[in-house]
Picture 1 (tube, rainbow, N blue to C red):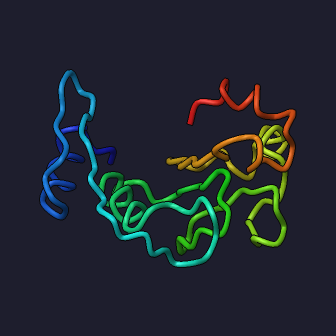
Picture 2: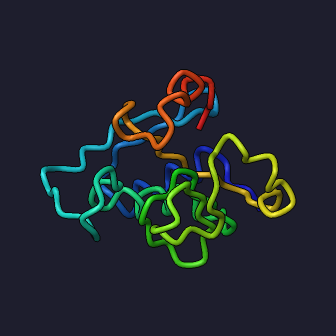
Amino acid sequence: MNQTAEQRVAAYNDKWPPALLTYNDRIYGVWVIGNTYENASDFYGEYPHKLLQRMQTLFQDKQKVMHLFSGKIIDKGAMTYDIDESHRPTICDDVRNLLAHKTEIQDRDLVMCDPPYDKSDLKSTTFQSRLAKLRC
């Protein structure tokens, strides 16, 4: 059963410092994560401390998660998609080929996306202009 925006916010605000609200069935807020810059790995670009746990609280009804541009993320049971085979993703391919994996990803009910920050972070710099068109 899908949660409403109000249910998501209530679950989040019960577990974390209240920071979210809803308006017209949309969720708004600001997450102040603090100055804890420690991460689970030494991977540049990894989610900030506790961000994944906050997202999991907000979308606790979503069990079939895929992390696009996954890097070295550790999320038990989630599908990972990354271009770098050294990260050992579930699917190792360029995101521009995403539709080639349609049968593998079609049952995902949540896609979390953390694209590269700038050209120097990309494996393929020609992808930068197309990245703006991808809505995560």
